[in-house]
Figure 1 (cartoon, rainbow, N blue to C red):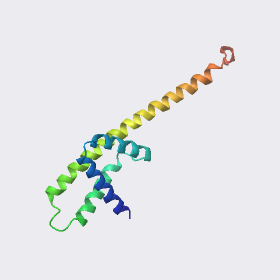
Figure 2 (cartoon, rainbow, N blue to C red):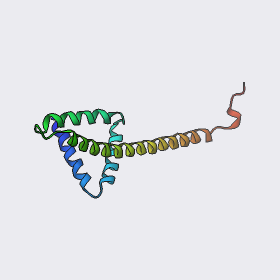
Figure 3 (cartoon, helix red, strand yellow):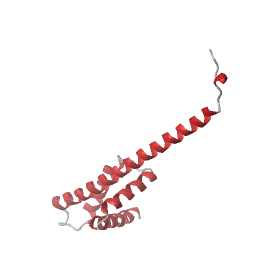
Figure 4 (cartoon, rainbow, N blue to C red):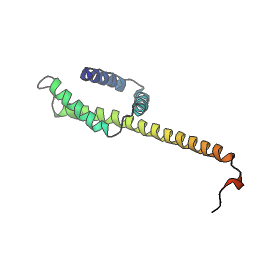
Length: 120
């Protein structure tokens, strides 16, 4: 079942490659994958799974080194764009977290009078 979904997802991804908005699509997919908790180190494993699935699914004689290299280029390009977007989403989230932390600390400290500090 998951393999069928995976192949359908690849078909959609290839459709996006041909579409004019491929960069924007990969940006959105990267942000979604970041939100799902996908890590950069998952991509090589997924690529290996993809190549294995293709190797055993593509009719005999049709899967060769040229086809494998072409799929590798597509996968590398798409995954690189998604990883870049995931990193940007992570940096934005870190800035938001830092800002929230700073705001909370400022609010907490704003009500403290200097004489309330304990001197040792």
